[in-house]
Length: 97
Image 1 (cartoon, rainbow, N blue to C red):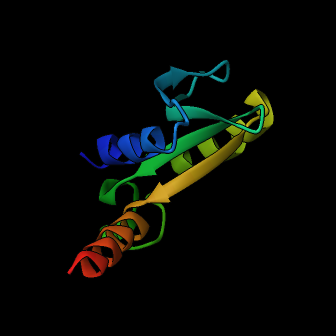
Image 2 (cartoon, one colour; image 1 turned 90 degrees about the horizontal axis):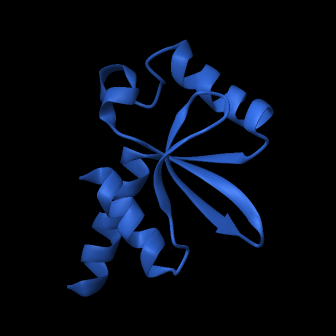
């Protein structure tokens, strides 16, 4: 659901995301978009990516993936943590009231 919401929002900005992209590094990214002619990877990080639903990544695999995608695949990788997305949803709901 979270990933679908993020991808839908990217689409609403006409960024035309491609989902579940297998990179040369062997990692699969949630989405890739083109921004000013450059590929940008998007990783949607739900609560399972963090210790005790907090803000600390669950382990070295998440950190390693971020580093390797940037260095091996040569693209910027943007993380969309669940707590930031949830805050945006709440802020938007307040504006509509």
